[in-house]
Length: 98
Ligand SMILES: [Zn+2]
Image (cartoon, rainbow, N blue to C red; front, side, top):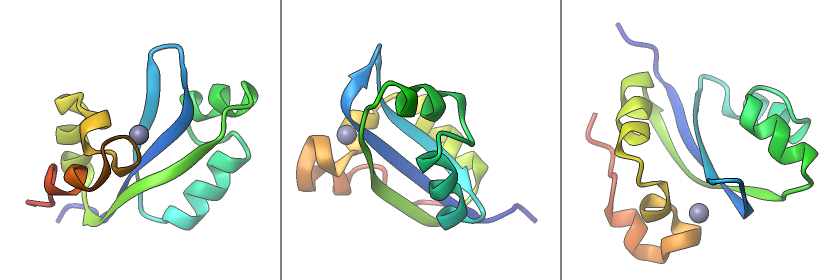
């Protein structure tokens, strides 16, 4: 049985190099977000926090697994599925289909 958790999309208020989003997976989202606030848990979130870039959790997919995270990552379309960048139409994209 696959581990279920929450896939989440973080949107930066300004780009860090080429990155404006971070897509991650956690079985304990609250703890994971707290880690990110401290600049821990992921290298990208560490450098973004050090650069003083503010960010928000734009979207979450509860009950997802790592293969769903991988599919979203492989899609390389974070701006299109981010409600902060694309508004409501983002929510019609990348619906859960796992
Ligand atoms: Zn965004």
